[in-house]
Length: 298
Image (cartoon, rainbow, N blue to C red; front, side, top):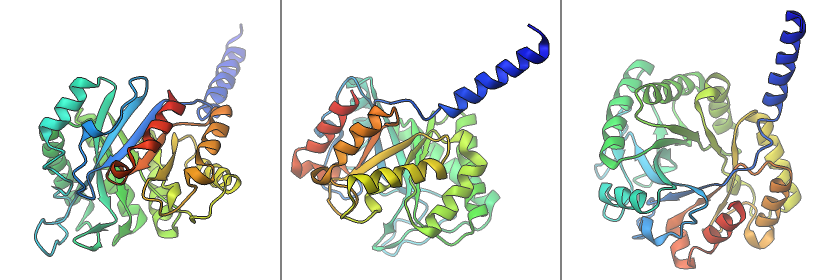
């Protein structure tokens, strides 16, 4: 084969691979846990051994832990239910279930009943503080990855992208984490920030935990699939997970066809995984959606 022909063939193969990066199903199931202090433990949650299972501790926030929390410029503290989700509990669940990994989520909606803002003093100082404080927490809790769930901002999208991108890059380079995800939803300000991050650092982001439950509670299957297609375009090439809330506050519910939509995506080889918010809410329901989700993915 002539060199130009060989290069053309390799280019075509590479383009085909990149084009089909989304056309793969996954057995990934992820669950947020610990934000609502409902005494849920890792061991309460049913775990299908044939899935790739991620618990996501919620949340680590760069705010003080005082009665009136204030921003700390990247110095993170733990805000999840540490009485029931301790370092020893993390070690135990990973030892008893080799298919389990545990991550922590950064930010969240509120802290001390007020919005938790992303508010860096500067990129360099925030990244330095965040790398140091998160490395300490991740090692203490024997964690594997991080999730980015900032939802309110007092910094522009470029600053957000620089801070978060450099944080993920450094933690991966230092082998502190093995994966990272982002958790955007359909809000103009949120999307502006996360899409700039995606354009600059998509190669470092392993999963997109898109909060489809932030859509209207009356969402139907057709609308859900349309929303999924839109987010596939926004986060092109990303592994976009579908999601539901066991609290029943929004999005396409199981009663209205969530698992029907999942099966349709699976038939198209576009079911990259499922995540649920949250184990805290699911506990009183016997984790029925967790069981159903994992059975579909397995």
